[in-house]
Length: 108
Length: 121
Image (tube, rainbow over all chains, first blue to last red; front, side, top):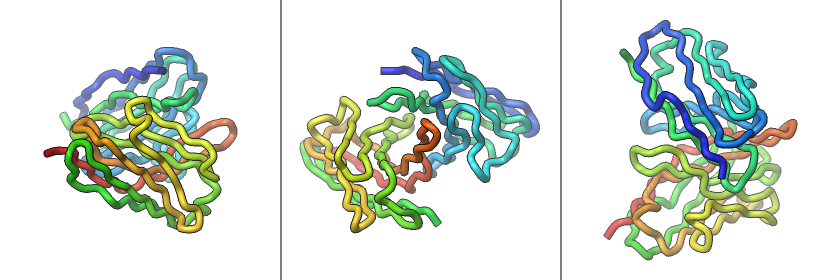
């Protein structure tokens, strides 16, 4: 199975900060990666697919990059509504389509 | 509006069974692969199972193989997860999700609101 490791697991940041979350795959997955945002008590919401394509309706301050084994999700200027947990998911080989362990972004 | 609504969760004893349902609306259900994903309390996301548009292909995470069965009824726009021989470690919120496939890529969108399954005596 392909393992995904996100770093950091926890991030404390202020409104307006630039935030970068990394997702590393245990083997190459080309660009078969998606990013989701989850707020407490809510379902995950798609942010980015195919590693770098922004889902329709998602603010342009979110961006994704990477290919192979290393990927990043960047929030260019953190907004109050962005405090949440973020997950990467590999959709290269399955079963299973694995998720990273999550990165919780909290207010400093 | 594209919508997925899960139901059927609840409290069940270890070794018991439960059937989850996911009602789809706002899109042509029969045209999409569908998936179940779960999240144990305070934990991360875990993919559980996928099913092809016509139900001819099904895939499961190893931990539920032989115990869970994913199915669908395209006439009713509904997805199901039959869960047997339930264990404490199956306790989780279960989400259904539509799988979008385009240009050789896949992603999950949207997700339902989830239904909580608690396995406890």
